[in-house]
Structures are given as C-alpha cells and as structure tokens.
Amino acid sequence: MKRRELIKLVGLITGGSMIGGQFFLSGCNAGGKAAGGAFNEANMALLNEIGETIIPTTNTPGAKAANVAEFMRILVTDCYTQAEQEAFIKGISEIDVVSNKMHKNDFIKCTPEQRHEILVSLEKEAKEYNQKVWEADKPEREKFKAEKRPYNFVPSPKHYYSMMRQMSIAGYFNSEIGAKQALEYLPVPGKYDGAYPYKKGDKAFY
Image 1 (tube, rainbow, N blue to C red):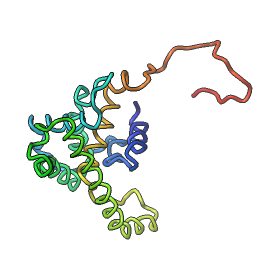
Image 2 (cartoon, rainbow, N blue to C red):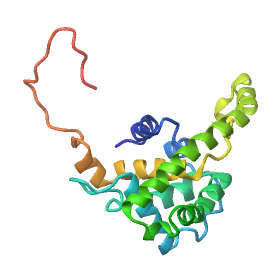
Image 3 (cartoon, rainbow, N blue to C red):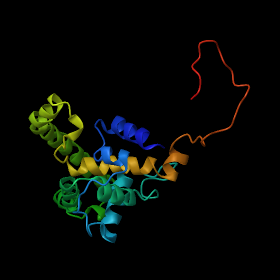
Image 4 (cartoon, one colour):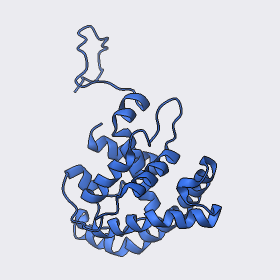
C-alpha cells in the first residue's frame, strides 16, 4: 500500500489525521531525539500485545503476527517530533498504571477481556484529551492559516493511546500479512486484459 493511501486509511478508521503523517509521507526525519532506548524487548512485547488487542487474530493473523511494534519503533524514531516522542514514551509506562488501577495487574498479564476494557477506557480518555488539545492549539493554528503557511504549524502532541492505535492500524495494513490476508491483494501492475468490458463513457484506467 502506498504511503498516501495508508495515511488516508488510518484517518478514515480513526477519525483523525495520522500523527507524524506529514513526515511519514515525505520520508523526512522529524528531528526528535527522545526515543533512545525506549524500544527495549519488554516494551516491544507490550506494544505488540496492545496492537493485538486492537487488531486480534481471527480467521487472519492479527497485529502481533505482523509485528506492529517494529513499525511503531521506526515511525516514532523517524517521524515523530521531540514532544510527540516524549508523550509516546511516557504513555508506554502509563499503560500499566491504568491497567493496575483497573485490574491490579500489568497489561501484558491481563486477560483479553480485561485488555479490551482498558483500551476502551483509554479510547474515551483520548477523545476528550485530544479535543482539549485541538481547542488549545486553535489560536496558533488559525494564525498560521491566516499567514498562508498552515503546513508550518506544529500541533501539540495528542494522547499516547491515539498514537498507539493509529500506528497499530498503519503497521498492520503496511505489513505483508495485512496487505495479502486482511485486504484484497492485487499485485502491481496486475495482469493485462485486452478484452476487459468497456462501455462508452467509462473512465480510462490510470
């Protein structure tokens, strides 16, 4: 899947623009340096389990099989601003704080049902948090828009769970498993069919 199509898909599913999407699209480095050693073995395992709760294994492999944690590591390291990196890294430890408050156990030790409850709770929290961030950013955002340089505006970091959810979805559909098993896979450029039905007025293929 092309990067632009992936960003549109994530936005459609999550109802918001993909965090770090502008850097992911351009392939540029966002300049953040906070990631450091945050992506250790334990944290990678946790992120894969969070992804698996968001996209579980059914008749097709889930997010864990697609190793979405590795996608998160790359995207956060290369495409997140310093502030976004710091928010995400803080969120990794915050997951277990929330988990212990709700179920007296770390997330990775919780049952699938308990994990689902935790993420539903975080989804609600994230929605409220992101709305407040949007409102707080509005004056600065409008200023850049009035100056006709909206792409220079750098928004405040959104809730860490929004980041994790978006990257779980993006990482999954960007993987071979997601592309070939969850989606209808059409190899590029595909086969040539000189007798394909055509009606006058139909658009030509690109």
